[in-house]
Image (cartoon, rainbow, N blue to C red; front, side, top):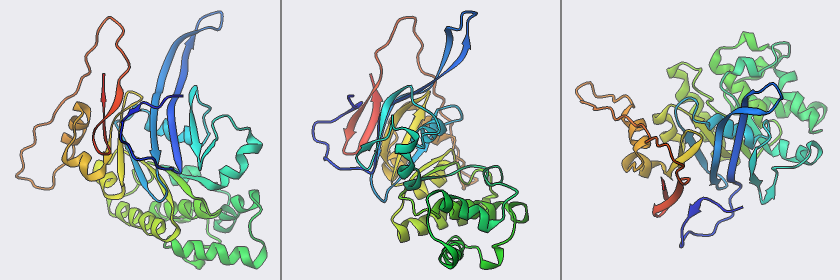
Length: 310
């Protein structure tokens, strides 16, 4: 399957994660004979890679398909088409049994920590559950590992037997991070992990994720709509619109030199801390025609900077 990246001089690297022409379509309605009538193309030909130890940010408005990409990488959704390689292995069509070792190496942190944590389990049980599935640690060794995880994410051993409802939102998200780390993963999909938190807590959680990345060598896919926070944590950023990537660049390059009209519109909507600044919002509406247009392709316009063009 051909990548939509086009470059004659691109450096050959071996990324931890490689996504190639990923598509996920949902049937939204069928006729009386059960045949598809309407299909939602949530993700429609997305390609990118994530290097080891890197944070790749994925941004876009609601409905752009960014969270669907994350769920596809986790194999929570089966793909309509395309391939996902992890550490050189194609995990796209692996069976549940074949996937089990990769389930340990690929973990997730979701938006709402309360809904992603079983309210009937205490901290020890919540963190032990993934360890049980993957048969990691026993007895005293396990308890020591759990206490160490809690300390890494800013919690304490005094929290071992508390339940999710006894924590604040920020503490619950820290608990979710500890649970994700419990099986020593290499790659974590962070799907809007701070959007449900108070602004005062968001930076603390981001700093925790960055510290853990440096200490443990983790690789992140960071999905969010808060553009300023994405810039802070990401090495490279992909911008999604209508199920496609329209621009990919390093964090600084994207913010200092946005080239796609949608990226420009997205950045113009960011709040500016200077009350005297006058911002002219940019709108973006793709041209609609009655005839079929060729599919846009990401072209490299400068080293590492890709923009969708026809």
